[in-house]
Length: 126
Image 1 (tube, rainbow, N blue to C red):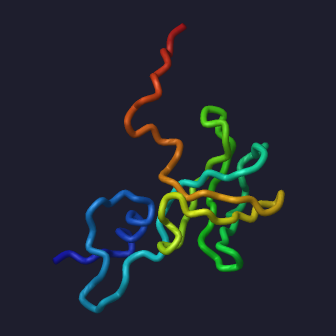
Image 2: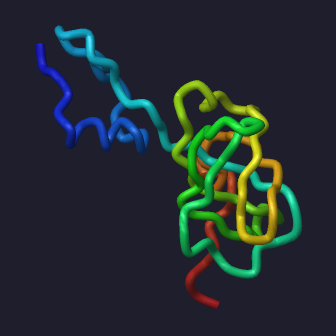
C-alpha cells in the first residue's frame, strides 16, 4: 500500500488527486484544508488581494482566501480559498475579512473553470 508523502498532501489540497488513501497505518488524518472556490458578496474589487484574507464562521476561523478578484464575465467577485474540511461543502455561507470590511462568502467549486466547455471559444483572428 502506498502512503501519501508531504508532496502528495499538497496535491490533495488543490484537488489534483482524485483517489487517494487519506490515512496511514498509524491513523494519522489526511489534509485539514482543501482548495475551493468562493463567491464573495459586495461591490466589485478594484484590484486583487495582496495578502491572504481570513474566513470566519461567526468568530471561528474557517479558512483563508488566497486570491480574489472581480470577474467581468461572471459579474461578481470570485476567489480561491483554502477551506477547513468542516466548511468545504458547496453552498456553505461564511464571512471573509478584506480591508474594505467583512463580506459574506459562499463556498463553491472553482467558479472560473469551464469544465464542460459551455463558453464558446473566441476566434483569435478578427
